[in-house]
Image 1 (cartoon, helix red, strand yellow):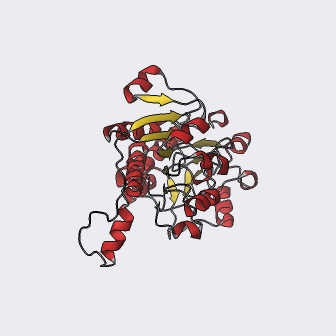
Image 2 (image 1 turned 135 degrees about the vertical axis):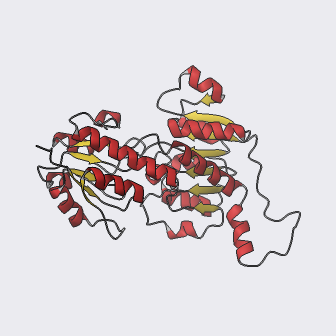
Image 3 (image 1 turned 30 degrees about the vertical axis):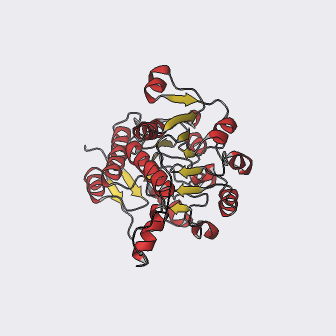
Length: 328
């Protein structure tokens, strides 16, 4: 007798090729239209699904998990970060959690360098001038930014993405510094010509550019708080392509407005889509709508990882990208 196909509920629209493959393999409930599920919709999905495929906008806390049906056995997250899922509560209820690590490394590192260039070279100001039809021709002193070659880049979080940022920054002639929970092995650190700082305070006080590339965990919440932001040089720039919660956004906004930090490039925000309106008004800030992973190749590869995790689970094996509470 043929094995019964798993019921898979997907909370957001995915690339068409991914949705097509999911339909071939499983009984799939796809999301239409592409809007976030309400909490009630998410609760209902968790009651009827064998496998839930959520994304970063879906807050899956202990209360939601407590109301999940007995069917739910796997949360196959579409994304690498799982800070929106209470992994420990899921495990207690016998629900596995998987993610999609590694596939977005290069795309996110590209975006980090793009933000550094955009802020330091004042690209959005130049674009706005052109789009408004206000450019009067070349001027020796107009829109002068800075040269990034020779600048000290401090990378906060030296995992896959941090190392990819370091490789790119070296090609631009930047000096690489980093703070991490653990120092990299010499065979990794030496080719990057990277300097390890055990003290984050000491590192940020000496950097020209700080790049946030660490995940959001209880220990990294507001890691760049008001006190630490004040250690930065007034000429320094901060960029974040990781998680908005790592930076105290209100403190950053105040300091940018006061000229105590020269600029910021942000792809993520502390309260998701609710961006501080004062932040949007500042000319020395580049804001992007969480585009770090927004390449077709990356999003398809994320989907392929989700499918492999579900298929492996369906075949009675441990998903290759299983997330354990101790990993967080």
